[in-house]
Length: 264
Image 1 (tube, rainbow, N blue to C red):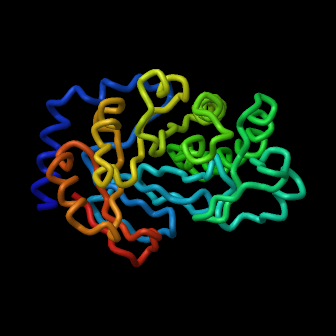
Image 2 (image 1 turned 90 degrees about the horizontal axis):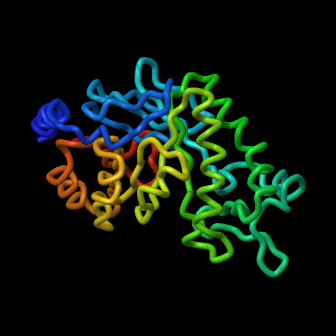
């Protein structure tokens, strides 16, 4: 099935005008949607020969000869970061409730407080060097995670998160790096423009019936990840629905190097 779907994808892209949905800034390149995609943010490994696009953590190195996306946690402290550093140097930039720092219960990460322009600018001083690191290593694009914090923490707003995203996307573009919308399917065309997003990375959009929301905004410049703990049926459904249009990767939840890795 994988080879059949890949052939259909080449045919689809050859005749489709979907990619014209994007208005990409000068100097920015996007991935080739005709190739396969590996989501390797949990650790790098040698991609299959069909893979042309890889996403890896900012602390990792790009895959030689491929289109490489650099993962950064742009709206929360990154898992594994020194929490003491944040507490001692940037506690005023983190979300607080009842005098205590708010923590993402799933990942044990602090939440960035984007509610004022001063905070957004100060956070950018911290995050922009991460983008510099991605650029210096030779990555092609940025994957800024947790844009959706405003949907999980009521003190935050979509407008403020998009304003922070725009600071980061403008900076990424100045380094000739594309900038992704990560998840957050409820965003509209105006939000895409406000945030300065060039393509989308969508986790579990088949599970939540959200994939069309991304393709409506980004055409075939959408990268989809489905996870094995949801069962292979969602991956198969995704392949049947969109495998001819966008790269879809089937991965284990922790995206470990030796975990399940399939494409369609």
